[in-house]
Image (tube, rainbow, N blue to C red):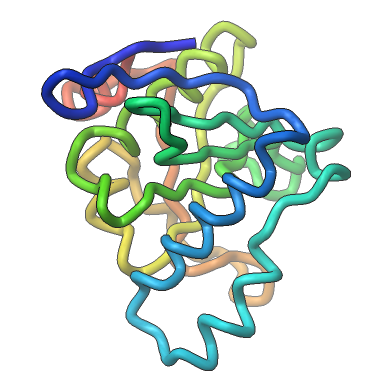
Length: 177
């Protein structure tokens, strides 16, 4: 889908995930969760909840980032439910974004979000919504995602961020492929 430098001498390719990729995808997720600032027990209990299986491929778009022949990151998205859409706009929910910790800081997460944004623009989608993990807030803000206010405490996740794909600001241009 997209090729970009990930480190000197290596290019990054992003492609749709197939059933044969799910073991790699879930290893990347496990490595990402291991880097979170949580207790070991919470990490252990959480991992299975974040894993993707064959059924998920029917409902989610999951893409794999590969650099130097190694799977280094994943992104998954799905259409936003109407109740989750800010101002009634169309959008995709970033369901999961994980980069292997040893590959962090090389632009892989940025390239994955850009690939998702490019696909969303091509589909005529207004924006991307993410329910960010606390450690990732700065990352999404650096891409131009704007924090959404909590309107309903019973419904709205506190760390929701929106990236408009139809009304680009200078900061949001950085997320473009």
